[in-house]
Image 1 (cartoon, rainbow, N blue to C red):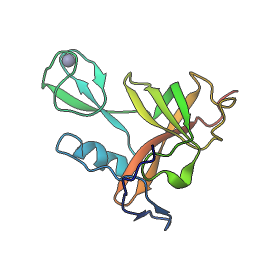
Image 2: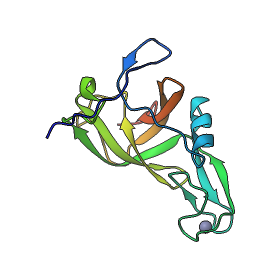
Image 3: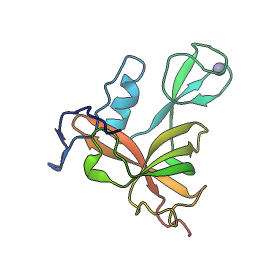
Image 4: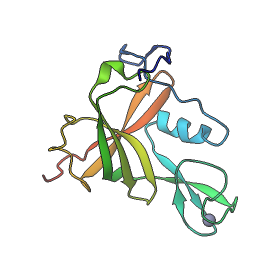
Length: 154
Ligand SMILES: [Zn+2]
């Protein structure tokens, strides 16, 4: 089934036009997106049970405490799993194929993301391979993605 959802085109800082969806910050995620726009990845951390978690929300998913803070991340992660997408999601029609992945942040949380900066070839994508965050500009928003860590041994 082909999706017919249309998304507005946005122009990034380099003038590149993209139809990729632009996330809308909510009260729970506004700080996350503000930090991302500045090139910083943050997650939430519970000050009662010391669990770091993603996606951002104002209560801990482990113990339901609202005593939570923001945790700056190193940007380092490892590849947990991935698929190489050959049928586009809305806005990704010009980008096939692309890699949809789940990565393990060094701080603990798992994040769904895209792997960029590498050919979408299963022979090049190794589970547990080291990754580093990069940010893709979509208008005012910067979306965290991951690429192979520089100097990573293969
Ligand atoms: Zn907790």
